[in-house]
Length: 308
Image (cartoon, rainbow, N blue to C red; front, side):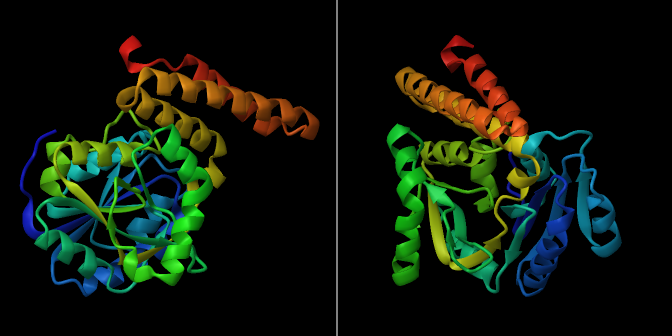
């Protein structure tokens, strides 16, 4: 991936969209409002993964000055994000979901931090649910132990800390969610951007690991905040979301963890989804059963990177 310095004091906002018309208007309206108060010059780039819901017409009819990149098919998040980054001009790149609302003073906090801390590649905001409650948007390097904590305890633990001691929540983290990720251009291109072997999910954890291996740090800054309408993709496309989530998880373990960890994860996932598939026989939910069977087939066919 070609690296350049980009325009100094220039922000490029890169939004990856796939059939997000229902959310885009709110996202772009809040984004444009905040960009109008920003001292830096900026641009908005939307990379559209072949939407069929009228997203493109909404953008062209209601929002001017946006650089739109329509793709011929759905290439997933990582590849679309890299396409947007290569088309961008900014020293700073903000990767943003299409289903968020930007809250006031969002940019000032993040950009000020990165501009004064050269050893940090990424600054990321607090992500909130629509009711204002805490939404977990960062984590530790993925392994069997950290994922157990992330799945069963992390949301409650950090939500309590955010509620009662928000001033103590600013911290270095291993990776930040792609929901809203501000990164300096040079480190992003230095590590090769997002790994395009990930289609949807886990590419942000992979990027965080590679950035830290290159000597950079990642900062969570709860003073900057956004609202995320969680599950927009998963609720509309449950098969795609679940299959690709498991693919991403297995790929990460294959690339970054031991063969034993990979095999243990694979065995766990197979037993989990075989049980779920069995239980759907009693509920007679044929859609869920077909999705679970596809997930099982995907897991069974996935091999460790050293076997590829």
